[in-house]
Image (cartoon, rainbow, N blue to C red; front, side, top):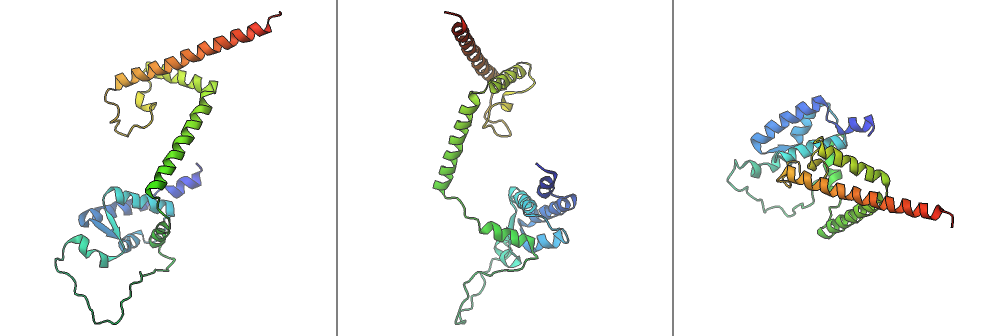
Length: 219
């Protein structure tokens, strides 16, 4: 990844300080408004990638981002009375408000995100199938490479010398390694499987070498 991409995806120290202040405020209220985010950002103009990271942090903290203070009454639970509705108006404008301002990076980001079509359940299943199919194709390709077999043999040696653990080799584990209940047992099983792969490889290699030598011998 280039240094440019790293800069675009990384929150600056100034923005990090602002985000921490917003988190403290959001935790107290349970939400944060877009106007509050803009006011705190001030002259800081984060990229779309940085905004995505900021919104991700809010989501992880269970802090809801709302449009403005007009939408926060039901979130703060401070008012138990229902607002009066004026039925005297001949017409009610049901069209959503449109903010065409281009100097508001937060609203621009939300508008762009809102224009992206979300996957349906069937779409998610289709994508998952394609990923699985692609992974299987890669495994088939890699299995024909001697370099991969040498790499697997090296993994076995590192496991035996305890330089790495099973969770570093086996995919599909979460960060807390909840899938592996017995680390030593799992490591032993992985070593046995890797050693079996290497044993099969050396056996096949020996057969091919013998076959090649037999063909080279004069009749």
